[in-house]
Length: 486
Image: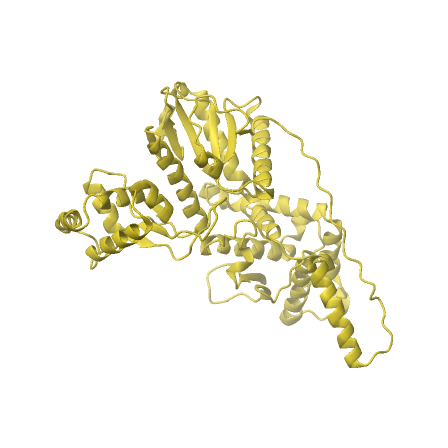
């Protein structure tokens, strides 16, 4: 269902009559990046919290019967450094975009974002946009900047500073190892732009505002960007033609820095190479329960209850390897090396040498894991009559051992199982491994409390599928003995 020009004209008149001009401030704010939260709408409109709620309800009621003017995102997303309950997030709808276009905002379009991470990124961009507007500075948000040979960059925010210099402000979140390709692409695009004549009038300091509070995740993110800068320098062959500076977004919003030369002491210069000391490892818990006397069942229960309490008090993670998010993102890093959705289709059609190389290197870095996989695969190989059932069972044994090595099990919220191909389906017909994350909370970030959306979870599932299946299917690339049932 679309909204006709006549309907839009009628809606604009009804909104003007019943709400006044304030509706434009709200809808136009949503149009900047497609999303806005309660706090941003309060900032843009100057309304009180209760007045904002009533105004949004009235706007929604006036638009009833048409595609939505806006919609509320189903999950409340807490931002880095934000205290108190997470504000409600709204997305611009089809009718809202049409209303904005009728007001001359030709770039307005309905928000199609569904995943928490891109929505948080859009909210971060809007924060900087509103801050620049509050300082009476011109700002272009998420717009292409074309230069030589029709190439372009797309800064999150391009701000005209008080002295007329143009400055790039990028909005970022936590950086994980499997984001490295995206980070390198971003740096390569900026290097190409700052090499061109189009960079005249631009500040060579690219300012990155990270939506994280200061802490372990903030430091880890800075480390990842430093590594990306170092790789880019090696590829480029010399120092990059721009500097990359970082600051927590919440720090910037509390006291915006619009100076041409960024204020010293407030920004972290990621262009500088800083060696960081290695962190000390934690000591495992040693339990003196190797052997027990001949107790009654009641006594054994009491002893086990006491041992359980000891684990709880001293940290259950010390009892052995425990599952963590880094394992899942590491598997995604290996997989995306050859399955990057941004890579040309022809390249993605070839043998996934990059992914196989990284998987092989990972096994070489973990000799006990490599030995475990090969031992479990080849165990009693000559004494077994191999058929489909025994092959599936052996694959499951290897999958279980691989996951247990990393602290995971295959029949919890993460389910991993070997299966036979669907011989009626179009596609490769071979024994494979399937992974399902049955509870999205598995991937809830302990630092931010954010749970990824279905698309990111699906990519992680596919990545672990691929890794586990290729422990059997690609042994010739991994230096492992071929499974006896393959």
